[in-house]
Length: 178
Image (cartoon, rainbow, N blue to C red; front, side, top):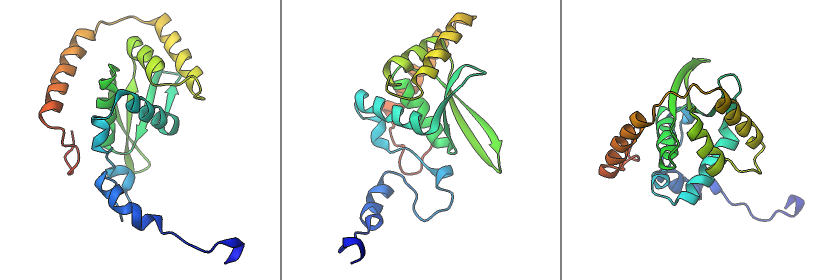
């Protein structure tokens, strides 16, 4: 009864079934490497998707000033691919790079073209975010220095193939990678 505390609730026991159903691995030391995003994110409303992507960016995202790209960071290949698909739902094109760092693979989802950076700054990155000015600066610098390779037709055909596959099987749970 120290400090007026009379009851104790073990949240881990009550949250464990929900976390497990969302793909959160329990009792493993390498959670970050095997994590997957919950499958309901693939079906959620665009507003909720924007909120999620903003929160993820605020926590595990940033702006690479050298290469002028917006980045999301993860240790999970599946999460990186899922982030790429979630961004694609908003019309934001990205790619995934892999780097070996401190004994493990690290994945970076990069938003690199001017149109996608514009959509990201308009739809995902909130003006209240501490990183908003960096995103705008990155977008403006890239826009002024763009050589504008026209990848849009290629990316459009790729996104159509991906979206048709998503309609066929949205089973991201159950351990299936994209």
